[in-house]
Every structure is written in C-alpha cells, then in structure tokens.
Amino acid sequence: MTKRDVRAKPNSMNKNILIVPGDGIGQEVTAVGKKVLDKVATKFGHTFTYDEALIGHVAIEATGNPLPEETLAKMRASDAVLFGAVGHPKYDNDPTAKVRPEQGLLKMRKELGLYANLRPIKLFDELLGASSIKPEILKGADILFFRELTGDIYFGEKGRKNNGDTAYDVAEYSRFEVERIARKAFDAARTRRKKVCSVDKANVLETSRLWREVVQKIALEYPDVEVEHQFVDSTAMMLIKDPTRFDVVVTANLFGDILTDEASQIAGSMGMLASASIGDGTGVYEPIHGSAHDITGKGVANPLASILSAALLLEISFGLKAESDVLINAVDGVLKAGFRTRDIADATTAPDKILGTEAMGNEVLSRI
Ligand code: NAD
Ligand code: IPM
Ligand code: MN
Image (cartoon, rainbow, N blue to C red; front, side, top):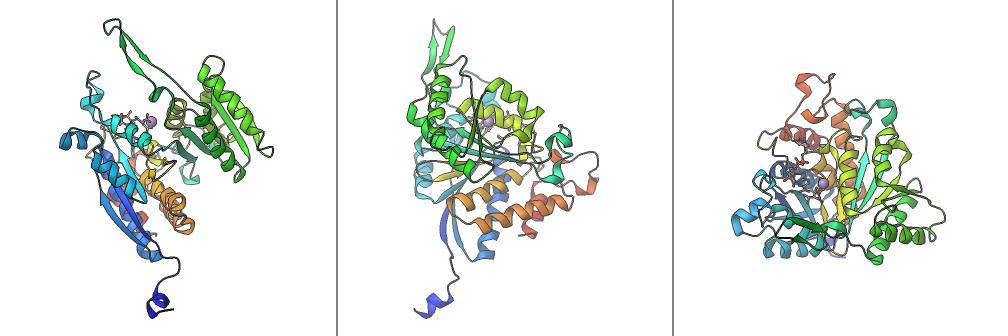
C-alpha cells in the first residue's frame, strides 16, 4: 500500500453529477439541491464533480430544441442527474405551439429508458397540521408509488383527423413493460410492509386488462407479498379517506401522474415530494412539482423536494445510505425547529419561522 492509499478516506467516491435546473422554480430549488449534495460530499470525503445542461423552455430559447443533443449526451455520460422542472406559461396558454418544454422531459425519459418513477409519500410528523386532511387520518401514512414512466397514453400515436376537428392519443402497453415495473414494486414491498396495490381501470380499458393479467402473474412469484387490484377512481377516493391502508402502489403513467399530485397533500405540499426516475442507465432525480409560474422569481419555493430528491440520488444511484439519511434527518431537524416555507406553514407558524427558498436551504445545510 502506498502512502497515498493510507491517507485516502475509506469508501470515498468520485462521481459526476449533472445539474439540469430547467425552468421557473426548477432553477431556484435545484441550486439548493446542488449545495446540499456538495456539503454531503465534503462531510463524507467524496468528490462530486458537477456540470450543468439545458432543458425545457430555457433550452428552446437557446437552441430551438427542448432537449438539445448536448444535454442528452451529458446525461448519458454522468453518474446521476439532479433535475428541476420544465414548463412556461407561454406554451400552457398556446395549445397550438408545436415545440413545447414538456417534450424535452418526455424525450429524456424515453431516451434514458427511465421506466420506473419512484414517488415516496412520507409525512414528516411535524407537518401533520400542514395538510388539509385531518391529522388522525394522516398519522403514519407512508406510501411508495411506482409510476410507470415510458409507456401509456403519453407515448402512443397522437394526432388529429377530420380536418383537425377530432384528436386522438393512443394508450399502449406491452407485457414486458408491465412486468418490469411490477417486479420493481414487488421487490420494494418485500423491504417494507409487504403489500402491493396495483391500480388500473380494467373494467374499461384493454391496456388495464393486460396490466392486471400481468400483475396477477408476477404476484405468483411473490407469495409473501399481499396484493390487491383496485380501480383508479376508487383509489383516488381511498387515498384521502384512509391513506395508511397503502404500502406500495404500482400504476400506469397517467394514473400515477394524477394520483401522486393528489397524494402530495398527504405529505403537506407539492413542495415536499421527491422522485427517482430509474431504468437502464443514468438515474434522474426530480421533484414531482412543475415550474410553478405563480411563484417563480419570488424566492418562496419550497426546496425540500429537491433536497429529498438529492437524498434519493445518494441512496439509489450511489448506494450512499448513511449520507442520504443525514440529509433526511437534516430536513427533519429543520421542521422540528419549526421552520417552514409558505406552502407548509399553518395557522400556528410564527411569522419569523416562515422562510424563503435560500434561507430554508441554509437551515438544512447547517444541520448536515
Ligand atoms: P406545478 O407543480 O408547477 O404547481 C402547482 C401548484 O403547486 C402551484 O400553486 C405552485 O405554486 C405549487 N408548488 C409547486 N411546487 C412548489 C414548491 N416547491 N414550493 C411551493 N409551492 C409549490 O403545476 P402546474 O401549475 O400545473 O404547472 C406549471 C408548469 O409546470 C406547466 O408548464 C407544467 O407543464 C409544468 N410541469 C412540469 C413538471 C416537471 O417538470 N416534472 C411537473 C409538473 C408540471
Ligand atoms: C410530472 C409532470 C410531467 C408528466 C409533465 C410536465 C410532462 O407532470 O413529471 O409529473 O406528466 O409526467
Ligand atoms: Mn405531474
């Protein structure tokens, strides 16, 4: 062993992280997410090297393309991506625009093979009062959503006919797509409370009937996991009526998109929900919220979803569980100390405890 080996910290890692802030509050919260990653690296003796790339509206403005080739190449070459959000009111209010920020996000998911989107819904105890749902209904809620991310009505054929007077979006699923996301959900359930709820609309949709058939078959490989099949409409109701009955939920792309925005209210706010998009190659870690034009530039966006996405990045892409836990505990500490961003404040929050994006980030940083 050389002298240099002796001095090297045990298990120290060299990793390349690509920061892709995108649009609106994506810029504001991702800046905080990057700072906390860097603090963790310093504390644990890792070397994280950062690069940055464009996506969404900012990429369209600079290059005409919502996902420039350069961005995609940098994503493929990096060890993990910390992503912000895409979107701009200009396009939201113009349904005829042919080039749109969201195309960049969808193309990224498809090109990187990010078929599994993990959306943990975990309520920090301190936020019991922040939700519009009664505390006694919420207490103990802890759900892990597996949202399929590269199929369904998002990626099927779409277009217009009848001189533009009729529009269509085709929903398609193939057996292998359902199998791989179902396996991920069952595997995760084994490490949790061993319950999977598969959500579909098999009473109406053919894609859902294939979904249910495949999940029933995969379930046979997991006799130790309890499985139930539930329709999406009643699941939407049950999530609010009795959130603690769920453990792992697995569902299709569109249903997962809608149900997790709803479920964000279990965790108190959209600004609390992190996600991991994983698949064949580089993992992408992103808050579930969008670019939030209504609060962009005001410095009030909640950065905790980005910080918790950074925690998922450390655990899932780098296998750094202790580092990830340090981040989650730091968030918990900040909430215990009573600090809130506006979206998670309630009637009992003292005005001097309501912080902006950067100040909230600094409170987390000081606890790492
Ligand atoms: P949104 O998630 O941007 O905002 C919904 C509501 O939640 C807004 O009132 C917003 O202020 C609030 N909110 C969201 N994140 C917050 C945070 N971190 N802190 C405090 N409050 C927060 O959804 P929207 O308004 O429907 O969409 C706006 C744009 O974002 C659209 O262009 C949409 O296409 C895009 N979008 C992108 C993504 C993504 O990039 N992953 C996700 C959703 C929406
Ligand atoms: C999300 C968003 C995206 C989706 C949009 C912006 C394309 O809502 O990441 O949840 O529908 O997947
Ligand atoms: Mn969404």
